[in-house]
Length: 332
Image (tube, rainbow, N blue to C red; front, side):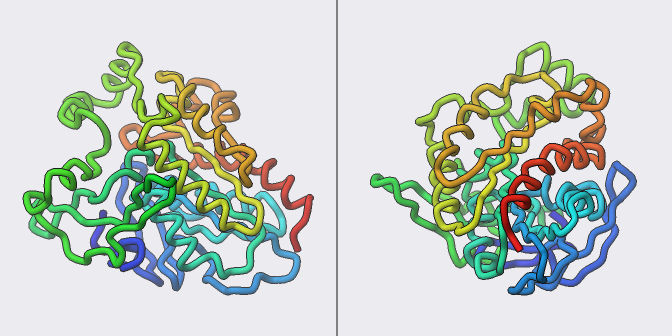
């Protein structure tokens, strides 16, 4: 995480530095971003009242929604605005965040804004991040440290308890953590040493290895009563229950599911559990899979798995009819 792009924020951990314009180096040739007065990659400042005739959507997510790797105009939120007249998207996407932090952003900052719909773009991998308490960090000298994040625990009665707010400001050495906290550092998945070895072999070898081994990146979705999914589900249901307008949950699939190297059955079954509880679940996977294998591979960069402009266009194309139906049904 770039020290120049982010700053400390006590309620959810960090935010983009407000009011910046920057070019970020990237394998795709670099990309441009600008932030609003609240510290998000959004071309709109946060004005409480929307303009007459505008249908305003509050959009939440992680780096796939914030748009790591692409300039602002190529992100799916901006593409939806360009495609649908009267639509205004306030993008609260925050790179590296999880739905727990995104819910806190909604509660602390966005809920008081006039709006017609809440769209939660959940990268399915966030089921791991939501169960973490710390994330790796390197200081200016390259020393490996960890940063705290806010997190929820699930109480015996099904309620949620919030921890580490205000978020501790300063990085710390992992050796200073207790055993349980060390186990809750977000390391990006299982067997990090093996992933590093395969990753160094190059993207083609990595893709082949995943296909041959029938790699399943997210076994946390295999059981409806698994601890990670129970926590994720409780947070999303709590969030949805507080929204007074329609809420759409969009599970954003990893490339393994889009390109067919892993089965999406488990995570799709889990997200269907949210239907009928005050939210619409828009699953874009079938729409993404209608593209050719070559087109689907072009939805991500050669090494970086974030969405390319083509990937954002495909996701926006899937979401547009869903939003159009809500716009037709009501909203000023």
